[in-house]
Amino acid sequence: MKSLLKKFAILWCLIGMGLGVSPNAQALSLSKSTPHVNLKLLTTTDKINSCQDMQVLLEFDIEKGWHIFSPAPGDIGLPTKVDWTLPKGYKISHVRWSLAQEINDDGLLLNVYADKAYYHALISPACSDNPSADFEATVYWQECADECIPQEHKFSFTLPVTKENVSPSKSWYKTLWNAEKTFMLQEDKIPNLNSEPEFWLILLMAFGGGLILNLMPCIFPVLSLKAIALVKGAKNKKRAKSDALLYTVGVVASFLLMAFVLVVFRENGEKIGWGFQMQSPVFVSILLAIFILILFMFLDLIKVQNPFTDPMVRLSVKARHFSSFFTGVFSVLIATPCTAPFMGIAIAYALTKPVFYYYPIFFSLSLGYAAPFLFLGFYPKVLARLLPKPGKWMVTLKRIFVIPVFLTCVWLSWVLYNQLANRPDVNQFGIAWNKYNYETVTQAVNNGQKVFIDFTAKWCITCIANEKSTLNTQEFAKLAQEKNILLFKADWTNKDSQIAQALEHYGRNSIPLYVYYDGEKLQILPQILTPNIVAQYFK
Image (cartoon, rainbow, N blue to C red; front, side, top):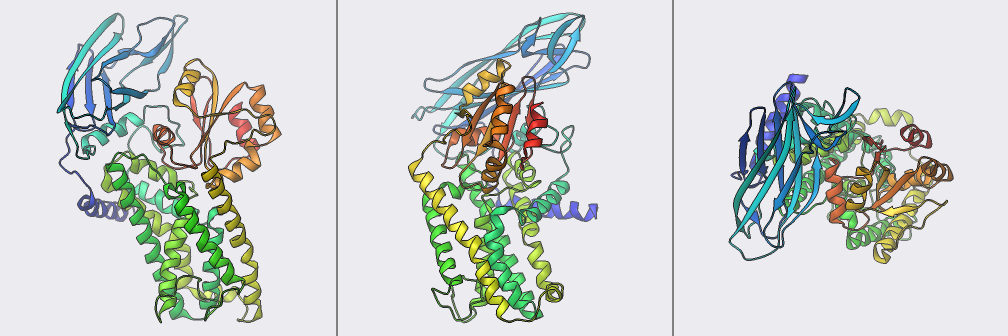
């Protein structure tokens, strides 16, 4: 089985390479060696778009038995730091360092790096017509064993400026993946942090995430639509198979199209993630109009020839087949407000890899998502045994399914209102939520303050459920006050590049995400929260 999955992964990678862009992109790489440390500077590409952010990495390869100090060295030691000289109008931001190791040296607490350490930052250029840009990075560190040796090196380089879109090279992604393992990540975030997870395992996790996605609350309205089709086709084996296959084709096509859109946006320097279309009031309005139409059909206010055909557009005499396909498409669109367990890990993996990894991962997600209905379509007797013969109860079933469709219309109306009004959250139970700001959070963490960040959105049903059950309660307010925890809310209802960058910082591009700094280390909470789970982490 493992061998088969590996072959499948390699096949999809080869196909994906044909779909990737900028295959000849090269990373700028500069090196410096001292007696005990090899230092390498790496940029995303060897040229810079004048209006597109560029990332830069520093890798410290440290000799065994030696160490260097972190930017916050502890009781003694010189901090490792990087000073930049940038072209006029350029800015450096979102600086990250590897998580340091704390050691006790004769009663002195030291924060050090051994073996490998990384520095990561974002350089935002000034949109100008200059043909080139000059950069200078001066790196300071102190390498220690039985003795300590201060070191300093200056990297100077010039990059040509282009108006063309630039995309990261393969070598950049390989180094970035190694760096991400050392940043402030928890073991439940990406499996096997000590070595890169095998691709076949990521594909398996993507399939499992797609499968679990069917159980998330945002899928309930779509289940209403599909359940009626399954009930109608349960006694007809041929029809059930064709409907299941067409539904699966619709799901797979939609996931791959979404992967392609994400790649295009990514190559143009946009920071978007899973569910990005829900940030558009136009898209939400269209979705609301479709669900109102479905509601009218379920209530028989709009008559159709066959009330048990999926309420999709009837394009031809074979409307049932088109209906099954578009139900698959529609189910993917409505699924995007949710992220299932394992799914976030798989997408996070794709985020740190070359673009051609997106396609096999999203393909596996789509197969997992379509699997339950595909199974019931090929084995309709399983469902037929559980159902009575067709009759008036089917009309009653359709009336029952009016409820989730109506609630979906209410929810979409509420999302649209909040997007257009852009009103801030009202504090409840005395909970003082601060608007997310990268600099404010960084300063608080560096000062040893306990910090909790809620990455949420009005269109994220899982987020809303967690807020109602856990985060907007008197119990949570009391706990946060007792532990002196500074609370931040990163509301992604509308497009926000700062929040998108923050999600990428934590190795995610989907919500919900709950980040907790306990004053010493970072912890990523589960996507499904309960008061007991939060209380355990806040201990």
